[in-house]
Amino acid sequence: MANANLLLTFSIEKETENELSYTREQSAELRAEVLKLKTELEKEKQDHIKTSQELKELKMLYETLKPENQELAKIIQQQRGE
Image (tube, rainbow, N blue to C red; front, side):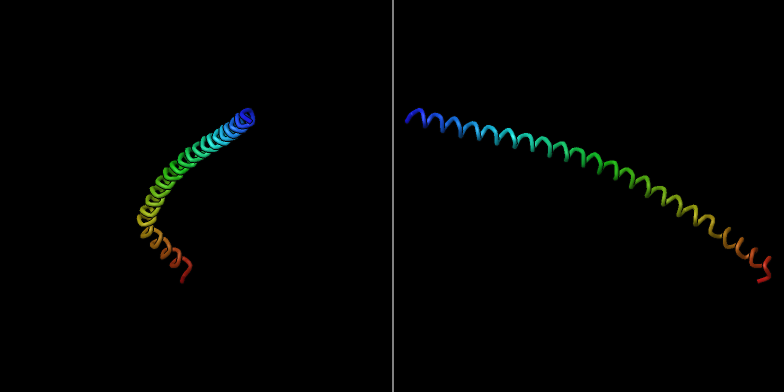
């Protein structure tokens, strides 16, 4: 009977050890995935900042050139006789 209890205890301990090992592996994989996602998010943030700055510059250029474009449009209309 003692041997059976000892065998059962060993079996339970081994199963628990296997579950812990599996859980640790999953945890490590999830931590790696979180780190990867954080890195990708930071890159996306940097891209967003760059794109926002470029958009701001383009808007400023548009506003700068807008009067010239309007003047050119008037000249073209006059040339066409409109």
